[in-house]
Length: 158
Image (cartoon, rainbow, N blue to C red; front, side, top):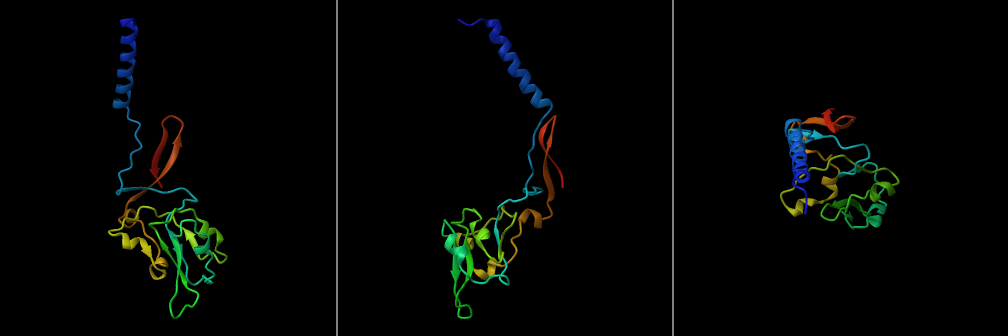
Protein backbone atom coordinates (compact mmCIF):
# COMPACT_ATOMS: atom_id res chain seq x y z
CA UNK A 1 0.00 0.00 0.00
CA UNK A 2 1.41 3.41 -0.97
CA UNK A 3 1.64 6.31 1.39
CA UNK A 4 -0.80 9.11 0.55
CA UNK A 5 1.74 11.81 1.46
CA UNK A 6 4.39 10.59 -1.02
CA UNK A 7 1.73 10.21 -3.72
CA UNK A 8 0.57 13.77 -3.06
CA UNK A 9 4.16 15.05 -3.40
CA UNK A 10 4.50 13.38 -6.80
CA UNK A 11 1.26 14.96 -8.02
CA UNK A 12 2.29 18.33 -6.65
CA UNK A 13 5.65 18.09 -8.47
CA UNK A 14 3.85 17.21 -11.74
CA UNK A 15 1.50 20.20 -11.37
CA UNK A 16 4.48 22.47 -10.64
CA UNK A 17 6.25 21.24 -13.79
CA UNK A 18 3.11 21.89 -15.85
CA UNK A 19 2.76 25.40 -14.43
CA UNK A 20 6.42 26.13 -15.19
CA UNK A 21 5.91 25.32 -18.88
CA UNK A 22 2.62 27.20 -18.95
CA UNK A 23 4.03 30.39 -17.45
CA UNK A 24 7.51 30.26 -19.03
CA UNK A 25 7.10 28.55 -22.41
CA UNK A 26 10.18 27.12 -24.07
CA UNK A 27 8.70 26.61 -27.53
CA UNK A 28 10.58 26.59 -30.80
CA UNK A 29 7.52 26.57 -33.06
CA UNK A 30 8.06 28.13 -36.48
CA UNK A 31 5.02 29.74 -38.07
CA UNK A 32 5.49 28.37 -41.59
CA UNK A 33 5.06 29.86 -44.27
CA UNK A 34 5.51 33.30 -42.62
CA UNK A 35 8.80 32.07 -41.14
CA UNK A 36 11.29 29.73 -42.77
CA UNK A 37 14.14 27.87 -41.08
CA UNK A 38 17.28 27.93 -43.22
CA UNK A 39 18.51 24.32 -43.67
CA UNK A 40 22.08 23.61 -42.53
CA UNK A 41 25.09 23.51 -44.84
CA UNK A 42 25.25 20.25 -46.78
CA UNK A 43 21.46 19.75 -46.71
CA UNK A 44 20.23 17.46 -49.49
CA UNK A 45 17.15 18.98 -51.07
CA UNK A 46 15.89 19.05 -54.65
CA UNK A 47 18.49 18.56 -57.38
CA UNK A 48 19.58 21.34 -59.75
CA UNK A 49 20.82 20.46 -63.25
CA UNK A 50 23.22 22.62 -65.29
CA UNK A 51 22.84 21.49 -68.94
CA UNK A 52 25.79 23.57 -70.18
CA UNK A 53 28.17 21.51 -68.00
CA UNK A 54 26.69 18.10 -68.81
CA UNK A 55 28.73 15.76 -71.03
CA UNK A 56 25.84 13.26 -71.28
CA UNK A 57 27.82 10.37 -69.80
CA UNK A 58 24.77 8.84 -68.06
CA UNK A 59 26.63 8.01 -64.84
CA UNK A 60 23.95 9.74 -62.78
CA UNK A 61 21.26 7.42 -64.16
CA UNK A 62 23.46 4.33 -63.77
CA UNK A 63 24.36 4.91 -60.11
CA UNK A 64 20.90 5.92 -58.86
CA UNK A 65 19.86 3.19 -56.36
CA UNK A 66 16.17 4.11 -56.64
CA UNK A 67 16.16 4.36 -60.46
CA UNK A 68 14.91 7.92 -60.14
CA UNK A 69 17.32 9.38 -62.71
CA UNK A 70 16.66 8.64 -66.36
CA UNK A 71 18.33 9.75 -69.57
CA UNK A 72 15.87 11.38 -72.01
CA UNK A 73 16.88 11.18 -75.66
CA UNK A 74 15.84 13.64 -78.34
CA UNK A 75 16.73 13.84 -82.01
CA UNK A 76 19.21 16.62 -81.23
CA UNK A 77 20.87 14.72 -78.35
CA UNK A 78 21.75 11.14 -79.25
CA UNK A 79 23.08 10.29 -75.80
CA UNK A 80 20.30 11.96 -73.85
CA UNK A 81 19.93 14.41 -70.99
CA UNK A 82 19.09 13.50 -67.38
CA UNK A 83 15.70 13.96 -65.80
CA UNK A 84 14.50 12.93 -62.36
CA UNK A 85 11.42 11.25 -60.95
CA UNK A 86 10.90 12.68 -57.45
CA UNK A 87 8.36 9.93 -56.72
CA UNK A 88 11.31 7.55 -56.54
CA UNK A 89 14.19 9.82 -55.47
CA UNK A 90 15.60 9.13 -51.99
CA UNK A 91 17.88 12.22 -52.03
CA UNK A 92 21.00 10.14 -51.42
CA UNK A 93 23.16 12.45 -53.55
CA UNK A 94 24.97 9.66 -55.43
CA UNK A 95 24.13 11.31 -58.77
CA UNK A 96 25.66 14.58 -57.60
CA UNK A 97 28.79 12.89 -56.24
CA UNK A 98 29.51 10.86 -59.39
CA UNK A 99 28.98 13.64 -61.94
CA UNK A 100 32.46 14.38 -63.41
CA UNK A 101 31.51 17.89 -64.58
CA UNK A 102 29.48 19.00 -61.52
CA UNK A 103 26.38 19.36 -63.70
CA UNK A 104 24.18 18.32 -60.76
CA UNK A 105 24.02 19.87 -57.31
CA UNK A 106 21.82 19.48 -54.27
CA UNK A 107 19.89 22.60 -53.29
CA UNK A 108 18.41 23.50 -49.91
CA UNK A 109 14.86 23.55 -51.32
CA UNK A 110 12.71 20.84 -49.77
CA UNK A 111 9.23 22.26 -49.25
CA UNK A 112 7.78 22.20 -52.76
CA UNK A 113 4.27 20.81 -53.19
CA UNK A 114 2.88 19.38 -56.41
CA UNK A 115 -0.76 19.17 -57.46
CA UNK A 116 -0.44 15.87 -59.32
CA UNK A 117 1.92 12.92 -59.36
CA UNK A 118 2.82 13.64 -62.98
CA UNK A 119 4.51 16.89 -61.91
CA UNK A 120 6.99 14.87 -59.83
CA UNK A 121 8.51 13.48 -63.04
CA UNK A 122 10.86 16.27 -64.13
CA UNK A 123 12.17 16.08 -67.73
CA UNK A 124 15.47 17.79 -68.69
CA UNK A 125 13.72 20.99 -69.82
CA UNK A 126 12.22 21.59 -66.36
CA UNK A 127 15.14 19.96 -64.52
CA UNK A 128 17.43 22.82 -65.54
CA UNK A 129 15.22 25.43 -63.84
CA UNK A 130 16.23 26.60 -60.36
CA UNK A 131 13.88 25.06 -57.76
CA UNK A 132 12.25 27.75 -55.63
CA UNK A 133 10.86 27.31 -52.14
CA UNK A 134 7.30 28.68 -51.93
CA UNK A 135 7.99 30.14 -48.48
CA UNK A 136 11.07 32.03 -49.66
CA UNK A 137 9.27 33.21 -52.81
CA UNK A 138 6.41 34.45 -50.62
CA UNK A 139 8.73 36.67 -48.61
CA UNK A 140 9.03 34.56 -45.46
CA UNK A 141 11.38 35.70 -42.72
CA UNK A 142 14.49 33.51 -42.73
CA UNK A 143 15.39 32.00 -39.38
CA UNK A 144 18.42 30.07 -38.25
CA UNK A 145 18.60 27.62 -35.38
CA UNK A 146 21.05 28.47 -32.61
CA UNK A 147 21.88 26.77 -29.32
CA UNK A 148 21.26 28.74 -26.14
CA UNK A 149 22.82 27.48 -22.87
CA UNK A 150 19.71 28.33 -20.83
CA UNK A 151 16.86 27.50 -23.22
CA UNK A 152 18.41 24.96 -25.57
CA UNK A 153 17.53 25.33 -29.26
CA UNK A 154 15.94 28.56 -30.40
CA UNK A 155 15.40 30.42 -33.66
CA UNK A 156 16.63 33.89 -34.53
CA UNK A 157 16.50 36.00 -37.68
CA UNK A 158 19.18 35.06 -40.20
